[in-house]
Image 1 (cartoon, rainbow, N blue to C red):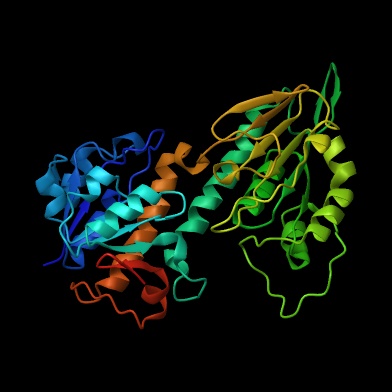
Image 2: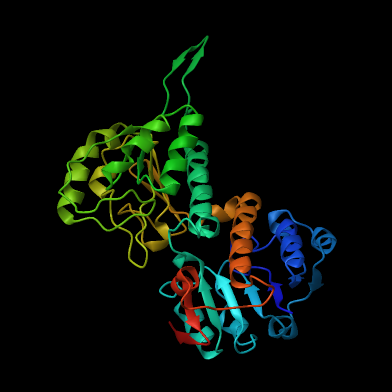
Length: 368
């Protein structure tokens, strides 16, 4: 019988958990056994007793608990020390990102482990319910707008008071992928006026459907255009024309939210120092690409920078600050992954399968 282990996340600032009582119950009903490290779900609001009620065994973080797992469910890859505890041939399901976690990647190779990388799940209808990048980006986009509203020294909505009328805040969003669209929707719900820009002109309709105004940038011809929720690297010519197109909007903005991440590469600079300096003192920039260098030239990962009165926030992982709902969504993504890999309660890693073949980054320690 396949045994799953859900350890507590140890990365600083991480409050999410890879499985919740609801999904633990479903995994057990699918014929698997599940153990959960004590207090693994507590930061996200899930008690040990709720996991026990769902049928899981509670264990400590001993080497035995790690060595007994056929499948390990996590958010972040195991550390070098944790990877050394795994039994050879075990499967780790997590956001792998070896370029950002080289030490973990090397340790997992040395341990002879297999890794199902959540960031490599293909954008297909069959894999839609497994798409953790989208579920976590959705959460981050929501929190970015809320964080901006909490940091800005003025209201987001139009307010008519006895002391006078307060104009609505102006928000500019760079990137209309999953995070950007949720940031637009949340800012609009809070009452702000929102404009957005994106390398893909085909997302204009999505932006406008949420009540935002799309900032048009004249594009070069591209063959086979298809709407996508993920960013791609833009040409230098496009970046120049985009900066010219958004210059006026940025100068008038109370808030700028940047969301452009390119998988496996440094985030593109979309907001230059000079452009930030056109913003009024008291304005706010929330850079969701901080973990990969930032879309704003002045961003510092994990820090708050104040430049000529403009506050620039560089959060490393906003989804982790909405731990309960982010965990619920991620756990449901993982449930679908496990169901796919264990269709009859037995672990099957079929490299010919379009989902498994695309997402399996390591197979018994070897790069696929």
